[in-house]
Image (cartoon, rainbow, N blue to C red; front, side, top):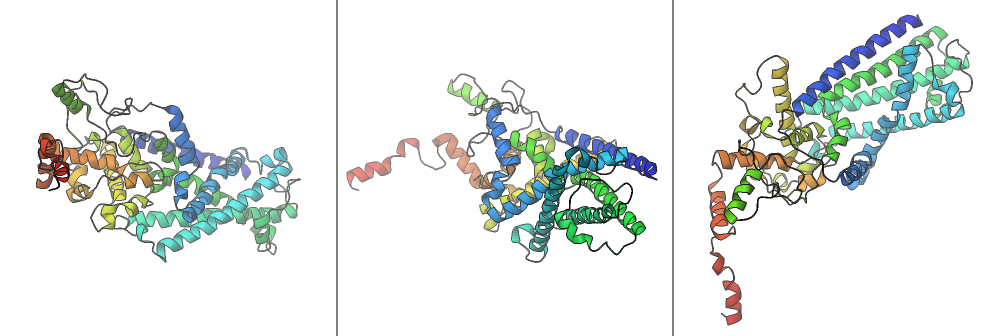
Length: 453
């Protein structure tokens, strides 16, 4: 019987590994659809950011209560992987609680700690479901969070609760079997478990056969649920569980207010001013998306292949938490722009192009583009470039980079800037200021003060 279970488990494990491999490869290929971008400067600062922001969840605590609840789920799933490792080895080797004889009394402490985290995850997920569906927190019910995004969030919270309940009831039924001295479960040295011990009373009246059936059901449900979760997250916003770490490492280190110059344009300007041709025009000289010597291609971005791979990684890293949208002044004042939607649209377009490639079709031949088919011009023009969305993002995503690239395409390729913007551009070119005054008249107001007029 146990041999059959082992074979089935190994087949399930191999199948999940194969599906996950194909999906991860697809995601990597989708990200590589973006333009090349070299990011290799200041590794010590990047590691520090990764430790504080990704591992330490620093930005999540800008909103302390929600940050604390998210931290409980984060730690729960991070540490409980030790327990998952034991289950996988048990499933392959046909053993039961393999680590117990090795770890001795520490094993009981470890399982109790896992159960403490499991209870914490259940409580927090229940609160998150209430916030989302009963209290209906505003930022969780924007126009981009309908249909699948809304279902996805509820599904994952419900599934996490079921997985933790399976873990606790599995331990409870296992405890009763161990106390009865049933072969295979009778492992010496394991103490009592705090939380599942409370649930054990539910199983004490069961006969041994029914107990074994339930123990096996809970064990399989728990481990297959975790393996299935591993595949599901690659299709869900919960991909941020993995993507948050590299995305934070590769996040831009430029000052927030400094826009990234276009090297080919910078080169022309410097030549015109008689300045030497150096760097890409930014203070961060090691980051560039194109060489100044390269032949100019398309200015800005119309579709995802015009964006950089970092922009596309940003899209896969989005948690859809909506902090960016809730801080966006354009959105707050009723404009159409939602930075979260910008990231979701970019990811959806990436997935669409990826599916074309998967089905053997040539990419980007569907007559669609990120601009217009996903993101409207009204949304782009509403952005004030204040960087509030970038500052508040808990995983260092920059919706502004994508907005600016799409705008550059509109203005530099289509000349479709609003009339008021064209007037400003003309003033900056001729007067070196956004205003319609000659540079020589700029200090007239001060002269008038001095003369007492």
